[in-house]
Figure 1 (cartoon, rainbow, N blue to C red):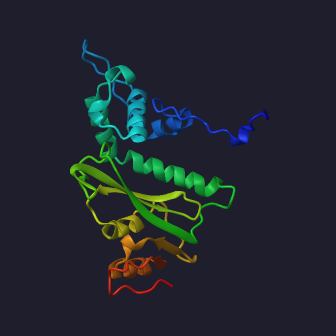
Figure 2 (figure 1 turned 60 degrees about the vertical axis):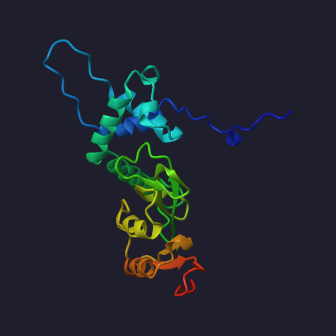
Figure 3 (figure 1 turned 180 degrees about the vertical axis):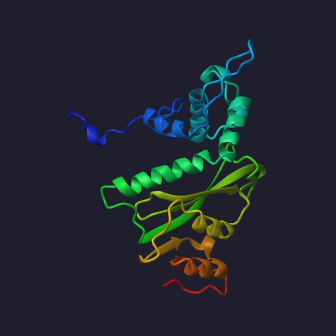
Length: 229
């Protein structure tokens, strides 16, 4: 039997622990914890334990209440409360912008590939959706969230918008364009590709005004749809 090359092996993901390099970058943006002057009581749960629990929810899609205290040494309610506080502070948006800046500088292929971009969405359970949840079109008995994503030519995320599962893609398209983490170069040729869920005159006009050449698949159910160029 031939030995397996290291280049072809897949690194196993630890669902219970955020990778150390990512944690080192994330913790720089977290608020400094204040030492309590009140004696007694339980010590404050470490941010590292909380972020490990959030990492687990992201990978598994489980509900907050399904997190067992023994797994991370922290209750589900504390994890959810701190996640909501960090989200309101814009911690995760800052982290995404930081990584995108890093990608733009260090990419071996010359940074962000602005020429060709694409947007799409997918339904998911709603553990991280918070108030941004809605009835799932495929299962009306369950609430869910929709992850809307805009990526560059190589699939690097440029914008992420979380909405309720029942929100139409064409409504989220405008949010995706205006939420790109880095300023887009206005002088460069840019094409935006999307499937028929985005086939709307409003979307076409908006992305055109934003400096894109739209390549949106025609929805045969729309009689007024224009053929893509």
